[in-house]
Length: 197
Image 1 (cartoon, rainbow, N blue to C red):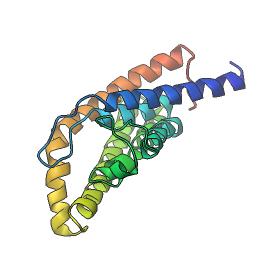
Image 2: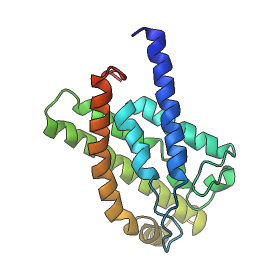
Image 3: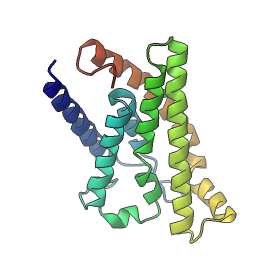
Image 4: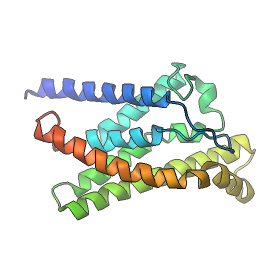
């Protein structure tokens, strides 16, 4: 495949994943007591990194965040604008690009190694990405919604923003690793993506 065609294909994949993230974000979230809904965003966003690679996956998530910040109604519930980012859940949104970056780095590090090492690397990347998303989101929630980032507010933020989501986060991480690896290997085998990305 020509170099120009590869670049065009990469741009198309990034655009496609951005569109998928936008669409998945509109699926109704499950309301939670702390005000942070349970959605499928944290499944599809790191999946972009596993399938497309760390850089392209991060770019897809970053475009999603920038579109929303510019006012395009791509965030949950067809919302958009800087006001959403400056709200209680803004920390989760601004840290979304970290998730595919780390998931993709994990996949890349484990490539061409045995299945055990490969999946271990993917899951380490997924877990660290999810943990940072929760940490940044909780700190933001404590600072913006509760007024200050201190031990008491962080504990309250953990209870509202992390604790109820741990079981589904584990399921999402497991599914993301399996689905991402299967799709990526199929695309590489079909010659649709480069194994070096």
